[in-house]
Length: 122
Figure 1 (cartoon, rainbow, N blue to C red):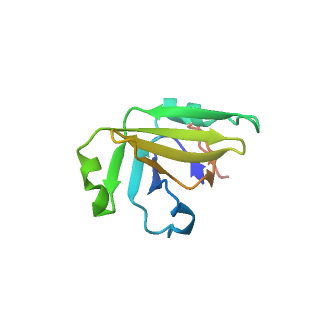
Figure 2: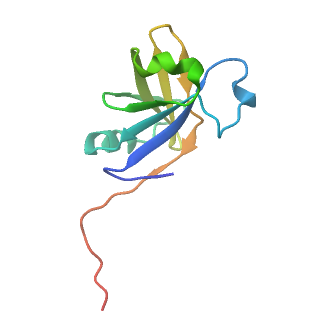
């Protein structure tokens, strides 16, 4: 996955339970959408050591409810974080006030940078 500034990041979220290993990746419970601003992208440009991870709390994000079982989350209280592990490998975690936890599958990522330099062709 390539990441660049001012682009959307969309991650599927699944309820963390005993059935998560057998879930269809194309049928998430929720979808987390966040715009990668300069600060968030800078935080994602880290590559933690193999025994470390970085947690980035999201202040602004949108949550799409895909499974009506969790429709209360659309108006309820919840918090989301991005987790960065060695690789770098990115995943998301969302928890709500009833202590339900949703996670995204881990994805390999590579931040890219637009330095505003245009390549001129001769």
